Length: 225
Image (cartoon, rainbow, N blue to C red; front, side, top):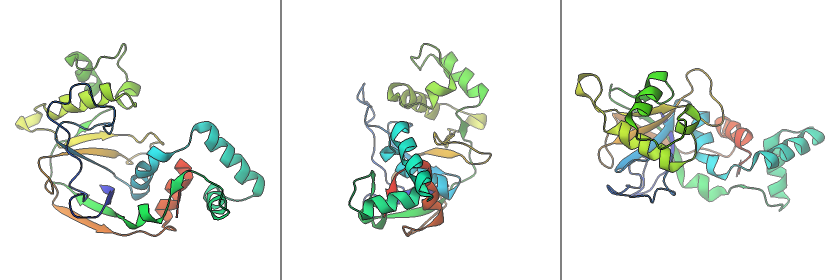
């Protein structure tokens, strides 16, 4: 997987914030599939990894549509418009150079283990049968939505399950909320301890004009300088 992460001592790509073993109901600030312990996120494709890392700053659909309309009227691309607005001192949601310069995009490889496909019908059936998710009608939209009381409890339940041969799941595979194409998955990996779990972990810096980053800018409406 590809993962965009801060690159400093104590908060590298394999050292996320640890979640408490007994969080109670206080999960509102957790990421979607965080569990007690350590969970890291990435994507099968580089452009999707950038998209997911910018998602929290994405404007509303109404504001995004307004930006697209302005760009079309001017005959330029959305990312060009965002660049021009920020250069002119007009505030738009985005990330300044500090965000980019303190991060790298990492390539991670994991041992050959079993992952859970969150949106597979068998997975949905198993989760419904467990009774763990307090949703009126449990569907894929509940499992991939923003309600942390559902998604984090489901992830916690999945992490505890024994799969074929007694294996514990390596993590969860799921689609990006910004769109999905064949083979373009997002991943939430359960790692046992900081700086463990991967056979390969290599990172590199990225420029503001990185082609995959610019794809993410167009998808999200979040500019990066």
